Length: 213
Image 1 (cartoon, rainbow, N blue to C red):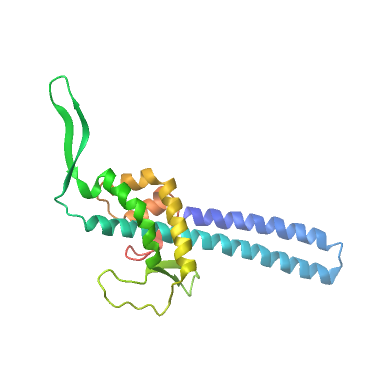
Image 2: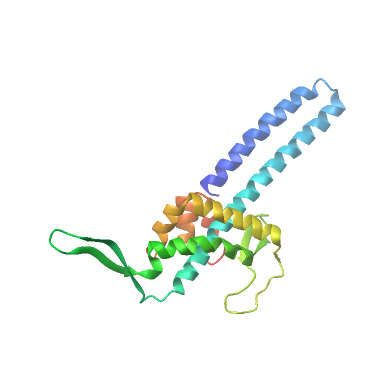
């Protein structure tokens, strides 16, 4: 379990202890039967808070990993031979210009263009719940090449796509510099390095195979 998940669990545990302690103190004034009822109610409320917290973490993680997957796909579909001139066109004292050609696919201008559109792709994702851990993961429910997919355990509706899109937009806004930094150069395991190690959006993703979201 990653650092962020552990921190969240510790935080939720502390909240649970404080809430239940407060409830126990109040229940002493209500009698034994009501005391038990109040304690159980407070415990359920604390558990609900913990589950909500975990659900939000899953959405952020899923959105980040889906964003990376879509960005990498879009970059791979760009002609690698296409170049763009970058640098300053100002004439230097010696008559030269500080202009160089770089691959268009990973240029900052192209990456910014892709980042403006990438969150629209979240509509192509559905939700899959792990029956063992109850953690949520997000997978494409439409293949890029038309290949049939097993979607028997995947839920896809407007609620899921809207939540992913919103989380994606927040990530693009808050981590624009990190996204450009990673995609400007070919890097292995971007999902783990960006979504987990750099941003802490989903530390538990380090346990997820690289081809899953």
